[in-house]
Length: 194
Image (cartoon, rainbow, N blue to C red):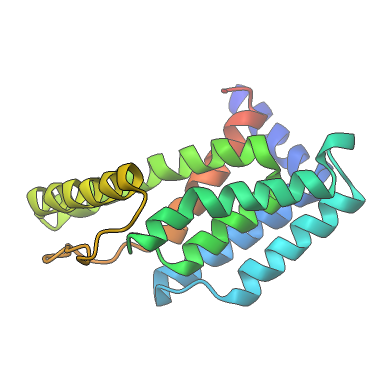
C-alpha cells in the first residue's frame, strides 16, 4: 500500500508542477537519443534552457527563484560540467544538458542534481569497465585525468602536452547518467528520502 501512495505522490508532483514533467520528458528524450547516436541535439538542450528560463520567470518557485534563479541554475549546471568537457571526458551535449537541467531547477537543486548525476556516471563507468574487463585501464585513465586536472588547477594554466588517454575503454553516453541522476534526485526529494 505504501508503494501505491509513493507512486501517487510522484504522479501528483508531475501534475502539480508541470516544469518537472517537461524536464522528465526532455531528459528521457536526451537519454534515448544519446544512447543511439552518442549525441544530444541542440534543439532539445537549447529549447529546454529557454523553457526553464521562461517558465522560471512566469511561474517562479518563490520571489527569489524567478529568472535569476533559473539563470543561476543554468550557470551552475554549465560550469560544474565544463571542466570535464575541457578534459574530453564529456561531450558538449552533456554540458548543455546539465545547463538545461539547471535552468529548470534553480541553483540549489542543480547542485544536488549534478552530484546525483556524477554518482550515476561513476556507477555506469564502473559497470561498463567491469563488463568490458577494462577496470585497470579505466583506473589508469582516471588517474591521468585527475593529475592533468590538478596540475591545471594548481598552476592556473593548462599544460602544453595534450591529455593522453591512450587506451580508451569506450564511449559512455553520459546523457543517460545525467537523466538518471537528475530524475533520481527529484524523485528522492519528492518522496522525502533526502
